[in-house]
Length: 174
Image (cartoon, rainbow, N blue to C red):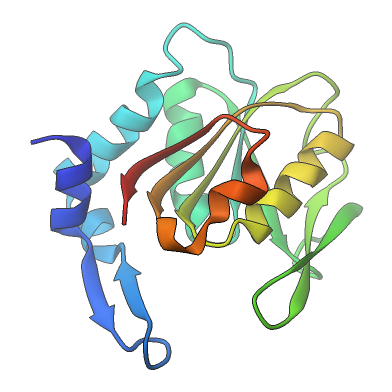
């Protein structure tokens, strides 16, 4: 079975959650199945075999799960991007817009060193706003973004357009 079919078979769809008209993609069954989770992390890591990756950046909150496992597999460091006010040390921030509001994400100022090769990861590519803001933070810290990876992509939301200047990979596309 190919990886996209495996992901789509394992993810649970919850209709009308968190609001009417939204079909939420619940990744918890995928995380709970040790064989599926192991297979996905290995698939994510495959393209980086033989390449030196210094940091994997995970986006708050489900992106942390995949970023931590991938960083371990790649023998890389882990950096995290969180919502404003959640990190205890000196941070840099980036404002971004969602469909109906704006928000701010932050990263520790010492999370990425100049020239470090970075892979960024989150569970879902929707509108692309959060990841674009996170990429801006990495670039402010002078990291080199090698790739941005997603478990799944909701293509009908056109998030790729905001990230067109980066190498993107989604393991499953809806």
